[in-house]
Length: 188
Ligand code: IMP
Image (cartoon, rainbow, N blue to C red):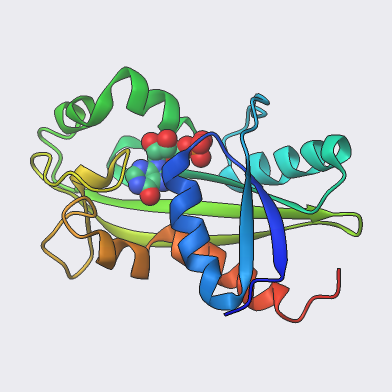
C-alpha cells in the first residue's frame, strides 16, 4: 500500500515504535520516530499522561504527532505497577513482580495502552486493553518489558513466546487500530 501519510510518533522505546508501525502500515499510515527526551507528566492514569504529553509536545513541534503511554495493571496488587510500569520494570524487573505475586490467589492482570493524537485542531485519545494473567516464571525472549510473564486469557504462551499472537491481540494493537479507524475518516 502507498504510504502517503506520515505522523510523528514520540517515543524513547524502539519496541513500541516497531509494533505501532507494523500495526498502522495496513491502514496506509506511516510513522516517523521522534526520539523525545521530554519528561512525562506525573499522573496515575495512562490516558491523562498520553493526552498531556501530546498536547505539550505539539505546542513545541507544531506537527501532527502521537504519544502512547501504557502499563501493566495487577488487580491483586491494587493495580500496581500501573502508570509506574516503566520505572518498576527498571527497578524490580519481572523477577520482582513474580516475588510480589508469590502467594497471590488471583493472578489476573491486564495491559492498557492509550494513544494520544495531537494536531492544530486539538487532541484526542484512543485506548486499548488486553486481559490475562501473570504466570509462575519468565518464559520467552521476544518483545520487551513484562512480555515474559504475561499470558493472555485463553492462551498458554506468554507474549514473549508468541510475538505474532501479541501483535494481533495486544493493548497496543487495540489502541492503534481504534486510532487508525478514526483517522481514516479524519480531515486534518
Ligand atoms: P511508558 O508507556 O513508556 O511509560 O512505559 C510503559 C511500560 O509498561 C514499559 O516500559 C513496559 O515496562 C510496560 N509495557 C507497556 N507495554 C508493554 C508491552 O506491550 N509488553 C510488555 N511491557 C509493556
